[in-house]
Amino acid sequence: MSAASTAKKAPAAGSRQADAQATRGRILRAAIRVFSKYGFDGGRVEQISRSARSYDRMIYYYFGSKKGLYVAVLEELYRRFNEAQSKLELDADRPVEALGAVTRFVWDYYRRNPEFITLLNTENLHRGKHIAKSPRARAYSLPAVRVLEEVLESGARKALFRRNVSARDVYLMIAAMGYFYLSNRYTLSAFLGESLEAPEAMAHWEAFIVESVLRAVMPPDALSNA
Figure 1 (cartoon, rainbow, N blue to C red):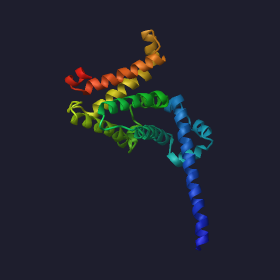
Figure 2: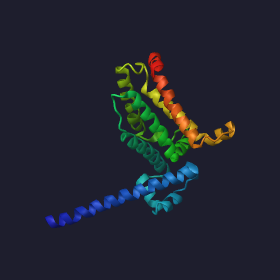
Figure 3: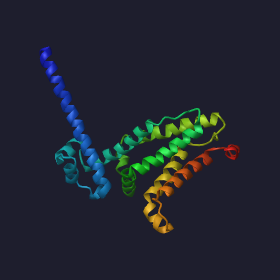
Figure 4: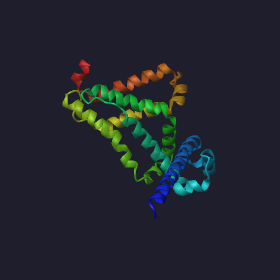
C-alpha cells in the first residue's frame, strides 16, 4: 500500500470514529432527557432514538440494551460531576476556604443539574440495581472523596480541623443536606408554608450547609475563634 493511499484512509477512519462518538453522545444526552422525564420504566427506546435523531438499532449497537443505556446514563452523570469538580481551584494553604468552596460546589451543581437528582431518585427507587452493574461506579466516587481528604488533611496539619474526621462522612453530610433539600423542596414548601425555591431561601440554606460542615470538622477552640 502506498503512502498516498494510507494517508487517504487515515482521515476516513478518524472521521468514522468521530461520527460514532458524536452519535453515542447524542444518544446519551437524549437518554438523560427522556429518563429524567419518564423514569427508567416509562422511558422508551424509540423516544430516545427519535430525540437523538438516530435509530433504535444504534442504541443496541452502542449500549446492548435499554438497561445498558441506563447504566451508561448513570455513569455519564457521575463523570460530568467529577469533571466539573476537577475544575475547582482550591488553595491547600487555606483549608477552611477550600472546604467551603467544595461544599458550595456540590450544592450549586445539584441546583444547576436537576436531572442528576431526578435520575438518582429513580435509581434509588430501583434499589440501585442498575448502577450496581457498573464496573466504574466505585471509581467515580474516588475523586469526590479524595478532594475532601486533601482538604481535611491540610486543615488537620494546621490544627484548624479535627484529625479524626472521615472524608467519606463529610461527603455524605454535604450530599445529604443539598440533595434532600432540593429533591423535596416542593413538598417541604407546602408542609412548611414557605417557598424553599425563593432565592433568599436557597442562599440561606447554602450558607447553613457551609456553616454546618465547618462546625462538624473544626475543634471547639477553632469554632470559638471563627
